[in-house]
Image (cartoon, rainbow, N blue to C red; front, side, top):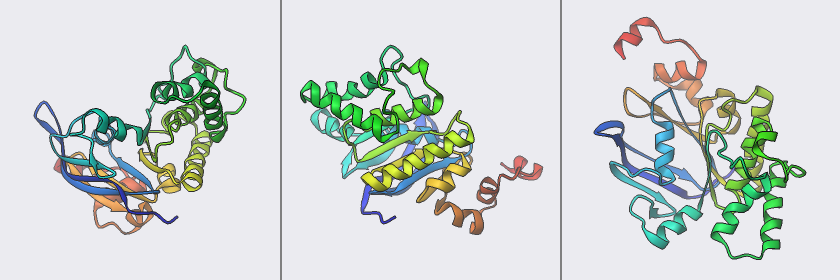
Length: 259
């Protein structure tokens, strides 16, 4: 897949909670149209980084530029413009349980557009169709499977046609077959619509299936320890921990003590 110029730039970024630095002075960019995966071990700051990218948290230092605009310093209309460029799927799906799937997808359209009701309804139905949920418009969150819940959340994230979709652990809690189907959906949406995906995951089959490029965060280094094609990192990285991660190898006792 061919990708374009950087759509997100993370510059000298540091994340900290109550003075405790989680990620220290990292730099990377995400290119328009690519599927970019953030990975690493537990507690390395993957979801923390994603929450900063979508504006939920402010950096302790550095900048996060979304199409050239700093989401950390944006206010008012500028912030609204940036947020309209981002769609988010949270790990649990975060659907409103009292609403049908159609009503969930309609919500951002009602909140942020002035389209006629029939146009909003048509758009919402089309988004559900894009994620293979046509015919499930009247179902509630409690009436669908975990995989369908993730698909519905992606449909809602796409409601306003953002160029960037951020997915937090999309395969979490799914069986291998359902997870593989979700991977194929991500690839199809990326190729057909040119959407840039930013995905947090540690699921190796999904990483190999969908990622154009990855960065790996390390809890000990508080930094990026690897970047590139996941297969290249698996086969050729000179970092022992990176190789262990991609080969699912347990860390030796001596290495645990050293860490």
